[in-house]
Length: 237
Picture 1 (tube, rainbow, N blue to C red):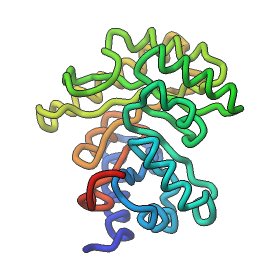
Picture 2 (cartoon, rainbow, N blue to C red):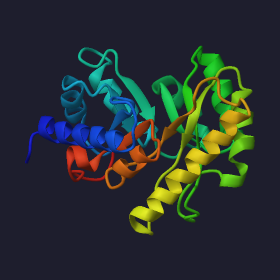
Picture 3 (tube, helix red, strand yellow):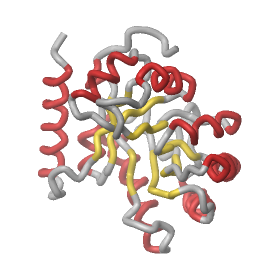
């Protein structure tokens, strides 16, 4: 198999080419390494290559890997992201483990995260997940409810509202993905005009199959798993 270092270099090159095509600043998109289903040894290898933003889909899997890694060098400065669906009963552990949570899809979840974060003395960065494709199998608030949820999250003192997240559509090809990402950017722009964000408002969108389109449409974060690490070795633990 091709070394991880070579795959990483190629992905970064593709990201920079997409930035150039869209007239954006070099290095203006963060790369999250999605390590769902891979062992702690893979995370350690990624950290050693400077991939210090690690994303997991499940609280339990992240907890196990962090236990093995111990948050020690070379990963002492790593930021851990939750990008999978989160149930309210996992909120306590989520705020303890993760620096950034991309899957806030209801006011109830946001309020539980805020309560748990305040108790833990934590202030995780949060993204409101929007179902921009209308796929019934996907989580996320409907587009028409996104701005109200953004306002609700912004009002919670122990959470730091950073932006929005979406997953591209299951069908529709590149143009379907582009339409989905443009919708998320439009929701962000409208919310920003209302003063909802303290900063510019981030866009967490784009995965292995569509990250270049996402960059062209304004992504500030892309979430890459398969293109970096290959096929997963087995079911996530």
